[in-house]
Amino acid sequence: MLKNKKILVTGSGGQLGKTLQKRFSGKYGFDWIFLPKEKLDIIETKQIQATFKKYNPHFCINCAAFTDVLKSEEQPSIAYKINVEAVKNITRVCNENESILIHISTDYVFDGRKKRPYVENDKANPVNVYGMTKYLGEKHVLENANYGYIVRTSWLYSKNFGYNFYRNILNEASIGNEIKVVSDQYGTPTNTEKVANFILKILASLPKKGIYHCAGDQVMSWYDFAKRIVKENNYSNKIVPIKSNTQGVIRPTYSPLKNTEM
Image (cartoon, rainbow, N blue to C red; front, side, top):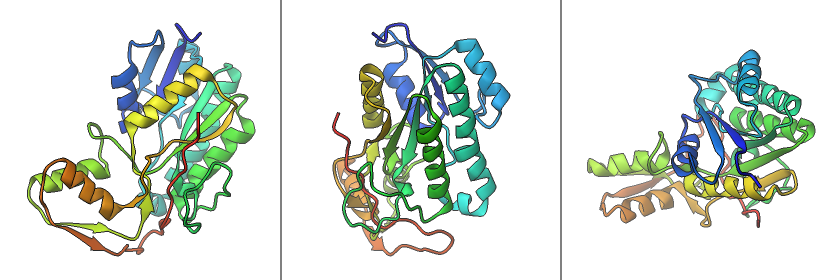
């Protein structure tokens, strides 16, 4: 039974953290602790140790990450510090406190060359700094966490929170703009609500430690996704397909994830 179990959520100011807070705060008998970066900087080991000492969480859901793909190329040391070194800190403190770690990762650990949805044991081969740092964070959790889960997702978006593709397209549509969107990159757009529900299943069932995929059910391009967003919100903007601009950063061209059956 998970009643009265304490669940610490790092990076709770992001779209997934806010979704978890909206959906589950005060529910299911869990004691949720939501800490945004302003209250817990995962780079600071002493802050993490003090937080665990204060709350003694049974679970830690690590939503904190450096997710800006272009800035990761420009500032690789910062991406490495947050996505790798900080994850090492969290893993170590979780082990010291016998806490179960749920670490959020990404489809960008793959190179996008397989032309079919990726499964959990497909070999990672990141093509940019962001993907490499997320892969190294994953690798550390898998090899060092006493009890840890990796939850990979693809093209994560919230309709209600954060700066993301869905909300950006909706904003452009609302002011009547013609919208140019990349049509040669494919993924599985994933609502944060689905990931939140998936995490709840892990909390409740405690499956075997390892990698799990949680993604949308439809493979589509950014162009396809933009058309869907505009249509479902009853706008009629012109959506113009364009090719990827690889200047500055390489992105996987096909990185859908096949969902883990649970």
